[in-house]
Image (cartoon, rainbow over the protein chains, first blue to last red):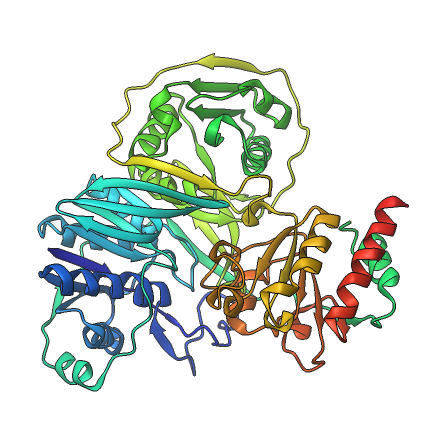
Length: 246
Length: 319
């Protein structure tokens, strides 16, 4: 079983988000970066569970600069066997997908895992793009994955329910809640992570034709209007006349 | 030409499909071109899409599209886009759209922006369009410079509008890639609007003290025609089903009205709901962080307030 888990590095969930003065770049000063939670909690952990049950190798892949190595080492501490970093600034989903696909093409992975989306660009784009580059089936928002030989049974979150499906290896998936439980790396994992292989691969040239060019913060809320607990008719009136949503 | 893929799961268009056609028509007007809708699989009334601005509906009623596969869908959408010289392809940012948009973009060598929430502007031959990023904490404007552009539209970002025109429905066929995913079953909640599509959501948290107290939440939701939701601790404790969990790890929603009952408003919860148009928070703790993100707040005992609010809405509806 050869499993690839694509991990992205994102600002921590609780980070205060700000940009440079003309709104063209994210301001990373004072921001703590983490492994994108869905990549870590669901995709990586499920891949490690499958490797533990069936044998094989889990490769963690990051498209990013050398500064991302702390995040990559964490993936190794959680249980990935080896890691690959494609050396570049990850400029856009199309660019990142191209890098991953070019690396994975020659490696014949059985399953390529993504998290359901990243918590910075909220795109949910890269998994589908990689699947298309490699001409593989894609199962998005998978909340359950079981393997029986070369056939996988999955559950996929859809609007208001789930879809149960089967697909033969190899394929690409994005993982959602339910796929696995978060793992905290233990001391042994952290120690062995230091000596696990981390390979650096050069990026391929690709021009992404969709680029984030301008950032802004949403308009500040006017502040909460408090209504007395015995004035619910007044709340209904405000929702109708002022907010105009009922 | 602007091509809109209008989803019709189990033969029925969804509200998000009407939103996508409305959006596609407005993009077409901006570019001085027409809006054509595409449906895949068995569809009850394809001509209905004309009401939202499509001047032509292309229908591929091949039963193999009645179950979803990202490869066969993306292949068909891309082929139709090519043969009709589409400049822009619009999809819904749904479970289907998220599985397909990236594939279509690769096939068409197109730039993709997913989850857009407003109309684009033109910048020469390029399009500029905005979406919410950093889980609702910021807005990013993207520029797409490729010849063909792919956009997926966030739910509840535009209202379906009657932009009606005469519509022709054409049955077409396409040599699309065969899907390799075998769908075994689809289980959905009957009789409720799915959370991502709901206009009003009544959500409750640990302040409810236990699952046996949810009757008042369900009653309030029924009065409003709302969908019920819950916070993570409530789903984790199995007080409510997993599919009701909204927040960063659960479902991200953007209803017109979000009523949060007994939810403190941790940042992970806010990340999934802060795009709601109006937020009402009911909590006994005046210091609950949720009040900072709220438009209207009620500080007090939810067990008294919720039934009172339910009565007030009933009176309003009857009025």
